[in-house]
Image (tube, rainbow, N blue to C red):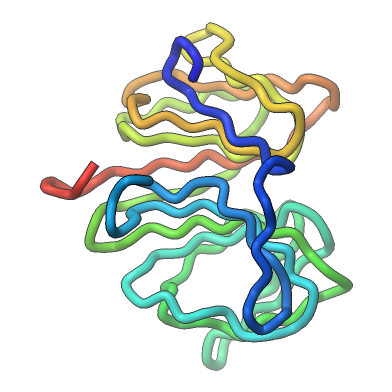
Length: 200
């Protein structure tokens, strides 16, 4: 853990878990709180290798974004949504369990799940060099590239490649992404606000 309380999870150090249907694998970057019987926040990266339905997660708010690959098409009843690399995250009710079609080959995708009765979450694009301030106590950065995370203008932590940087004591801090090698970097800010009485 860094002096700013930021913890780092490198994607390539997380073992992939194969799906029961054989359609892909999932790497859990974080399931929080780790010592609770019921998680409130789950952040994972899924490798989707073939078409198939999403699992039903009733009571869960979900966000979905493409890390690598062209993207996918998701069918929600009579509505079809294409989510391509570079597009903003798509938010939807986990109980909808959409059908998923690959647009042009396998993809690697970022998933955020928040238990609705425990708190409220959000995920949006992180632009390198642009500050992000939030009163939410639980905040995170997911990146597809090697970056440094600046907290209140101080270097807090960094990644060697794709990974997660997070803190449960980040309310009011100024966060900013600084690229290490590339002129730009893909990233997403995540915040979570536990409801009063939710386990921490």
